View (spheres, chains in turn purple, cyan, green, orange):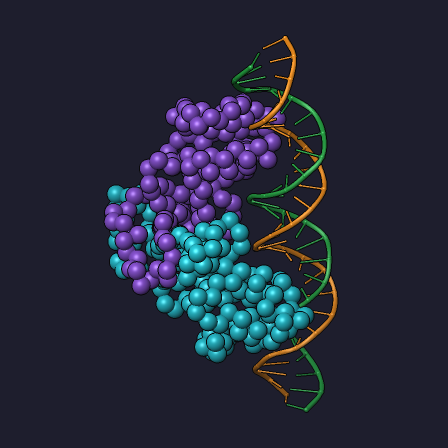
Length: 138
Length: 138
DNA sequence: CGCTTGACTTAGACAAAGTCCATCGTAGGA
DNA sequence: TCCTACGATGGACTTTGTCTAAGTCAAGCG
């Protein structure tokens, strides 16, 4: 994760204990925590960190493009540190588990000009839905 | 919209003034209203309709498969009556405008078995993002 | 036709997720 | 080491949605 920390430093981020903890909590592959989950884990390392700070820090990371916001359902937004490898998401409809996936092909090129309604289309998010092995066998 | 009303009747729905109004409000193409917007419009026709009823009715329509829930951002869910023609969505990042689009190709077949992590994948949602003509010229 | 019944509606309390703001604290440069 | 602007805090507030207890009404039945 020092990877993420390094990048943030390099952008003139003022380093504080709170920011370090949030960045550390977000480390790893297939990590998709909600803001509250990030807060809960951060608290175990830095008991006095506030919810507002977690929200602020996550928001800044998103703005800097170091973390991606994922909205897979009506519930809370999730935060995905895997921002530097383009990917999409596979979500379990039963338990909400999320995996990063990389489909073949480019969905952007699948949208013909006639279906763009004059928009300048810049991005596409693909969410696959199904049932994960654990839920299927339960 | 009598189309939607007819289908609902046929499923043994008890017909009430409230349900009729909600169904009528949802009529049309490229309609993606939030529950609150549906309520606001319903109130102009039936002043005493309550928020809870609008939520209940929308939820039932979704369960019956006559209306689709669309979650494009952190804000409110939107309701799309165009449930019987498969389609995806194009969203303006500035003003939130939504258009129904139909890309070529099938994203489901773009997810190789090795990227499915044992999931039984049953559905895929594609959200294109960009800037609409109105926002681009403003 | 009017009765009955259970499905439907209502208002408001409640909950979850997130934002805002005034104030206090501190990282890091001089 | 001292200063100061940037960051952190926590509590109030907002938005979106759910739940519940009590009242209302659509529609089948006689």
